[in-house]
Image 1 (spheres, rainbow, N blue to C red):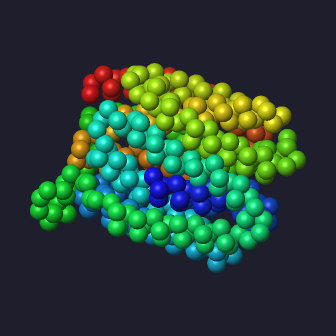
Image 2: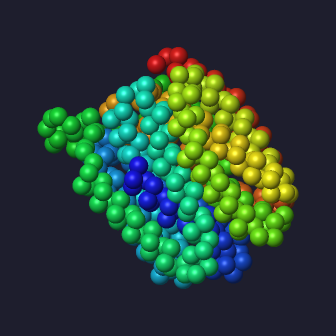
Image 3: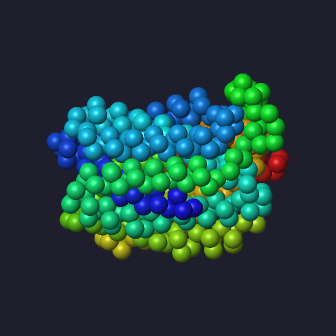
Amino acid sequence: MLGTALSTITGFMIRPFLVLYLFDRLEGSIMLPMLVVALQPLFGMVVSWTGGGLSDRYGRKPLMFVALMLQMVSMIGYVFSDEVWHYALFSVINGIGSALFMPAANAQITDMVPEEKRAEVFALMHTAFNVGAAVGPAIGLFMFKWNASAVFLISAGMFLFYALLVTIKLKETAPLLVGGDRSPQRTRPSVTFRWAVHKPLILLTVLGLPIGMLYAQVETTLPLHLQTSFEHYKTVFAAMLSFNGIAVILLQIWIARRTESMASHLVIGASYSLLAIVAIGYGYSEVVWLLFLSEFIFTIGEMLYGPHYQKAISIMAPPEERGFYFSVNGASVLLAKGIGPLLGGWVLTATNGETLFTVLAVALLAAGAMQYRVVRRIMSRT
């Protein structure tokens, strides 16, 4: 929780303004910043799919340490970048690091926490994540105006601190490495896809794409869309993200405890419906209070969705394949963040923000109806 909170403070100092920063540095191009931002999750997705079982075979700690160091290098690289390919290269490195870290971290939480407490613990981690969302955008808005390089260097320092924290404080929990000779496990072959076995995992992953697409638009096209309705759009955007983070800190644990015993398919289905309403709000709000109402609904939707979705994955995954399952499922978010900026930028350029978010709302409703059935079937079988 400590490492997550510290690293996401600096992460949210950068993420909301990276597209706007690149937009200015690349002479007002829309598609070039979208391409640079998209490279990070796309390369991360490749690593996630091909290296999904690495933390199962080699341990959670080594993967997390390497991942955090790669992200540190990428932050330092941004400081010295002045060409498009420089930004692209360090975005790729950042994407690889992020893709290696999250599945290993989620798998370790699953190793450590009893099944009946997992939704609450994943909610606790989401709360820590939103400490950064609460204070990071406001600090980032100020610091990008003052000195953008300092933001990247501070973030690099936080990744280094987190890597040291993982090395010193965490214990290895991978079932294949704990309590036995490690040498046979290091040569254990990777898990391979079998449709009959992994069909539920693939369906969960594919149907999670629209939610990932919504997150991708929030970080890329939404601030550009807000320019058409709000004069001080950067301030409005930073305030929205801080409002979201504060609301999660205040409400996430309470909501997780109240919904822990509820059927996960009901909670997940409701969250898709709420996020579809949010997409319409983002697209059509022309006054600040409607925009913040949409952001509050977004907050409720993500607080319902995340912990129960991760709980479903943790229950479905065999203990020796947890890293693999979380890696494959994480590819949904990475793919959405990869193609989301490109598709969103193209639609925004060709039409307008209203059209973009209306299409996204329809996709959320359709995927939510199918995800409801898939999760209900998974939970009933397990």
